[in-house]
Length: 310
Image 1 (cartoon, rainbow, N blue to C red):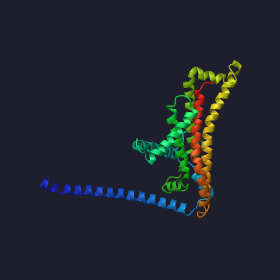
Image 2 (image 1 turned 30 degrees about the vertical axis):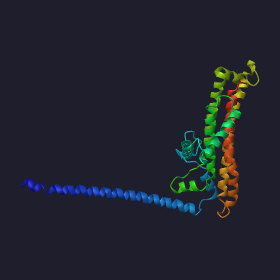
Image 3 (image 1 turned 90 degrees about the vertical axis):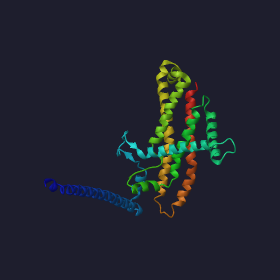
Image 4 (image 1 turned 120 degrees about the vertical axis):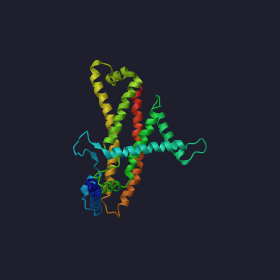
């Protein structure tokens, strides 16, 4: 009898557990729905703000030239990461590698295709530039020059993407700031130019030896008189810093100014934007490869000067 009285209790307990699980699932589903609804409402609000053009001109310009930073900071904090510059640079770098890999896979000794002709044209152009400027071993300089030209060219090419599309799309999706032109962010050109500075020092040591490189720092250009060692050293250090700064600022200044002009053109009424925007884009088509060529050529020249004995 006791066992008979206990049997009905098991289904009741099972039913309670099932009810609790159903309630929990319903709560989770409701939370997910509420979260999605909240995100969608925020997205619609942001889209309405953008499409109704409620932002003032100053806010619009400031938004388009501000990087996505982690952690968020408006100070000159050296530990702040410009995530948009890093993401775009990685994506473009992978695209560049994939492009060369695809061209290499399709290369043939027979009649070359259009892609192979295009890549061979670029490689021959870079190789001839290296041969004319660098007279030491070129096994590393050639690929380095090709990489610098390709990366800087792709950085600059992003400035031809309509200035509104990506930043406003990211803003609507909840990302407040996103710039897609790495060379218009001063950190990217300086990162590349500081890398070139390191290579200048390494090639100076490689070409002249550690002792020869150190001797040149203290004896060039005024001579080996001990009284002139300090002036020589100061002048050589200033020269190294000037090369690094000028290499970065030339690229950054041109692309930052170009980006800013595109942003200002975007403030004009939509029906007239294509006139100044189209003219500036046509001119900018010349600036994109020119700045990549200048950065590559100056890098080769600086490495050649460091490697050769004076």
